[in-house]
Length: 242
Image (cartoon, rainbow, N blue to C red; front, side):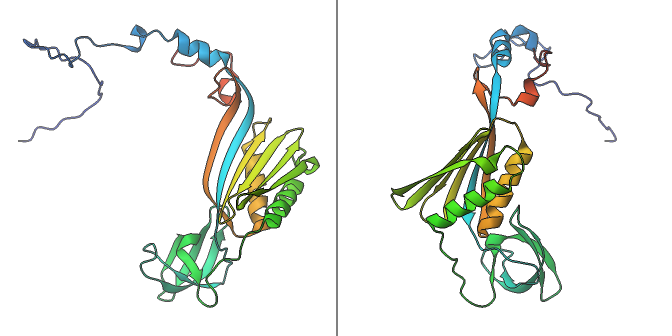
């Protein structure tokens, strides 16, 4: 059979034109277009949004940091086997390392898949004083948002962990350490700036040295059931779906 077909369009949910003698309850009886739905409440919610700030939540994990030319053991199979290698490139922001194995192969691995080839494999402990100092240093290095003028407060004796917070005219940041290997950072700024969040977390991890980003969430904060960033709703034109 030499028949060839070209599919140019697929319209999901379109009712078949041939007659049907039996119509099951779950089967569609009419094709509905977007114009058949009342979208007024959605449009009202869209226009009622007033983004007032930008929130970024970081989850950091205590992990070892390696440098270029460090001799390490690398695991390409999540810890099942380890091969001797040398670090040839690093991306601290993403906790990624490019290593050169003794057999000449290269591979890019996360920090969790590397360990020192000699010496103690355990990580140094985190302390509450380290968290406080790291936050203060990171705030002093951010050039925007007046973070270097922040008032820093610490709360001790909360279980095994520690809470540190900073307040300034442009926002707030709360750092929660669980007393072991996990650190949560909740950063809020009135200015919607990804660059500021990037700069802050880069300095925070740089000053501490053994923390890597496990998760990052970003969301707007404001009134009117806000779900969109200011850059998305600043135009006076209606959205395309309205």
